Image (cartoon, one colour):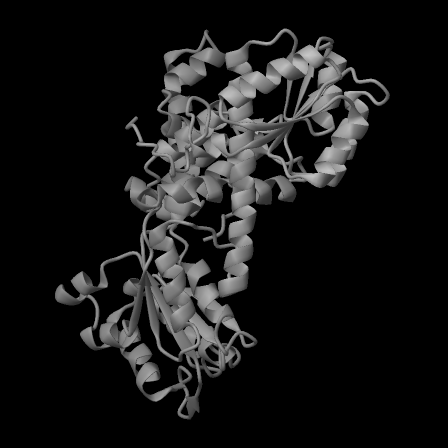
Length: 483
């Protein structure tokens, strides 16, 4: 797995093993009734570049928390008056996102379980190992900083652009956001280009939401998901009797989207005849139902998207040149995830929050090792693959921190055979081969957003063959993720 450079302003600064800018700016509150412990921690933390405040009991600790902001609390279990376990819920009520590490000489299983359930980040037993304690502190602080940055970024994007569910702080994405905000109020046709899974539909929705058409329909269609006859009927509608199964007249999506936006994904897959009809709508804003004779006038903004080089398609005669230039009035190029690695921690936390909430689970966080693994990975499936990976990890997790062991083998570089033999040392060659086949199919389905037709095409096998394998290997088909 390739190494990733981590300068001070990188997304990995301040994680365990680094002593970057994130750590040195962190503010830590220590609540412990023993003077020697407070002094010891004060010296240790200041040597690492942290700023500190000290409290001898819960009353003083809560008062300090109300006066100042912190990135972490180190909380003793055995305090005079209120115990640390009694104080922890009060801290969480005031500051839900503030991480708390419990420190105690009485680390019973019951205490640990109760503290974790109450929201403690970790549980350290006295006497502690300085390096391990500092590593835990770095991880907790880095996650807290990332979460705060994520929330602030969402607020900024919402205030500045009216964007929802779009996350990014990289320079390349900020340029995309500026372009989207600039072109959204116009009437111009827009072409969004980017690899599969980069979030083209999300950008199209953001353009619509920031346009004068925002109160009118946003109508998406995947033009590559249906044959040309059905596509034309879906787009333009038909009159009764236009073809064998046309037992009643039906409106098309151009009429449904009238006054609003029609988002046409995978535009490069349309046949030449359909392209000609789309061109006429763009030129004249008129069309006819299939089998009809009356022209219908519409006011629809078209946003098209493709993961294929349209200019190359034009040169090779598979896409109309005149339609290409009609669509490509304004082009928005979405970068692949590997070109904006600094966005990975923010995106990962966004999906962690979403899927934790969707599955009614306590908030999940990534370990430092898991986060490094995600940043190192090339993400051929882009944001969609990252989303599916996080969803899978959240569902499989049994605790608040998700480690790299819950990430798929193709991301961690861990072999299928090793993973299987760890759980079943008596596995036969047939067991190993079957498990490898199952994992490969699941990973391909995840990369294809659980679209079995796309997966079968990429495997170069008939769809029926793939479905047979899915059934034989007891693979549960999951719902499709979001673009």
